[in-house]
Structures are given as C-alpha cells and as structure tokens.
Length: 222
Image 1 (spheres, rainbow, N blue to C red):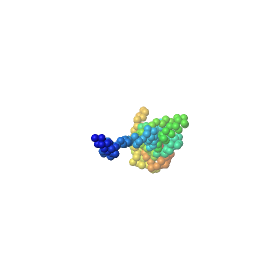
Image 2 (image 1 turned 30 degrees about the horizontal axis):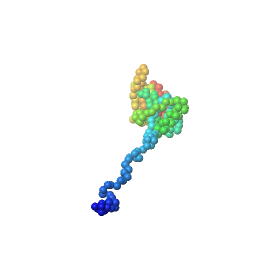
Image 3 (image 1 turned 30 degrees about the vertical axis):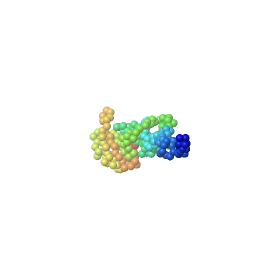
Image 4 (image 1 turned 120 degrees about the vertical axis):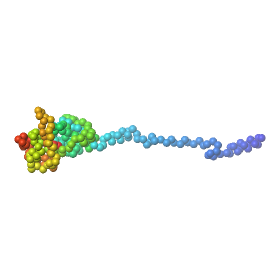
C-alpha cells in the first residue's frame, strides 16, 4: 500500500499541465479595446470649432452712411480687410435713399478686424452681423445704373429716351414708375448703362436737364 502511494505521488509531481488539460493557465487578461484614444481631446475639439467658424465668408451691415458716401470711402476706411468694390452693396429705400451698406468679408477674422478699425476711428459707423440671405436680397447697381428724379407724371418712356439722346445705355432696362411722395406721388426712372464711365458721362451731361419742362436730377446708384 505504501508502495502504491509513493508511485502515485511520484507520477503527480512529474506531471506538467498542458494547455487545454486540467486547470487552465493563468494568463494576463487581454487589453480591453477602447476608442478613447481616437476621440479628439477637448482642447482639439475647441480648436477645430474655432477654425471652422473663422473661415469662409462673413457678412455685415454698416450703418451711418449718407447719400454722398461712396463704396471707395468704406473700402478705404476698412483698409486691411481685403475688400473690393464687388464686396460692397448699398441698401436703398424705396425712394432710393441709402440706408446702409452690406459688406461681404473674406473671413470672420476680417469682420472682427473691421470692428476694431471702426472702434479705433471713433465709431463713425456701426457694423452689425448679417447673413448671406440679406446680402443676396440686395440688387447690385455697380455704378452702372442711373436714377432719374423729377419726371412729370404724364411722361412716357419715349420722353425719357429723348432726354438721354447721345448716351450709351440699355433701353430694355428702362424702368419708369411712381413712388409715394408728399404731397403727391412722384415719378422716377432707373436705367442701366453699358459701363460705369457711360453712367458717369450721362450724369455730367444730363443732370439738371428738362423733360417736358420739368428739371430732372440724376444720381448714379452704387
């Protein structure tokens, strides 16, 4: 009996467990899969948002202008914002009184810089944030459209064309209409010329001329 126990003890001490037999090996637990490392840190996310909101076009509405304010005046005032004449539109009332200027900035940083320039120059103007819809709503006149005011109520398109004889304009663009006035409605007309030079030439040569004995004033719309 003692010999049997010794044999069993010897066999047990020489047994080396193999994978899949008896008790499994104690292995290091596998590293858990995590996506945390793939997610940007909070600082990175904020930086990405900042870059996104500060790129692309930005729009502003500039108030404080008058009928003599030119696009070039605004571009010179906001020097450093990389504006061109195509980046500025004048917002007119129904009677073509200038209300404000809409400005398309090349970036949000340029808009922010414009705010600083206006503050530094004594706040002659007030710049407010606008959107693309407001910009698109305003028709660009580009210095090629002329406004005629003081037209007699009984005038017809032929009278206006005779008045503009010798000028190079697009006759199909002539728009003759009534606008509310005091004490009576007033008749005005807009017409588009082939170029800015032709529009200015019409202003120089025809301003204060007459249509049916009424003196007509001309103004180039920006």
